[in-house]
Image (cartoon, rainbow, N blue to C red):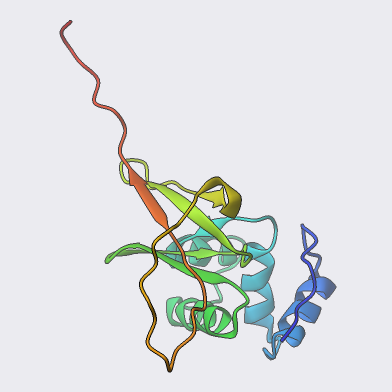
Length: 148
């Protein structure tokens, strides 16, 4: 399915159109969650989305946020980025790119696809095709020396 190029930020009507384009019924809660994700290209955890969506009035449950993010990822509207077994981000930029993850700060940033060269992929079994390659570069802050 071909999807239109994204224009940031998305207004409410554009969010409804985007959800419809991806075959997602635009309920009030889904529109609210998508509105947060598509305010600008960003990486958010489910808890961050929950906090933002309930900022003005707590009406969306944690289960609804998790289910909605799962649906959005399943439909290809957003990308799920698993930086470690206990930390998942939802990326509103679903174009091909890689990530740099700072373990110490928890910050996840995009690496444009042309800035990283991936070579030597294994030969694939005859009954599958490659869907994509995603690289996560994990970094730590350099330790500061207390004594020279």
